[in-house]
Length: 217
Image (cartoon, rainbow, N blue to C red; front, side, top):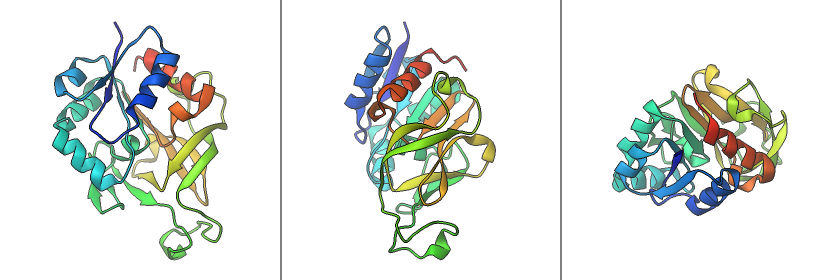
């Protein structure tokens, strides 16, 4: 049985993710998991997140699931979603927070009108509203099994004020543009992670979840 654990550490839209996964893969055993052994026993893991980064990291640590997530990142297919993607990196500008450091890199804030443009050279600050919310095109920067059947420049749904800035450009699997080109998908070995919300992205999002369910990295 293909068992999929959705990590429930108290900071994510777990039920929306579960409904989308059920629609994309009705034959899979999909479980919202708040126990370490449940995540360890699953064949693949979805790691969602929403809210402020300091709260997400604190809640993950307090839940006792941090090591289970790190272990999953080492040895089974793992899909990070939204703040779940950001948490995989070294540090976030949001609260100057240390993250999981699975991937080297920083999590940066979009520069709104109240931020100095010098901090984000090349960013169009005069019309930029934060958070970035709504549909946006995703450019697939390299082939990947999770892009299968999803045309390049397909629209996905975003809600976020921060984005990842990988130290290693080889991690980048997708980019979008909002005042500046930014990384919105990363991939390495058994991990794929996205800034957008597949569960809010209609058929393309369901296809991405379906691809994940059948992915054998």
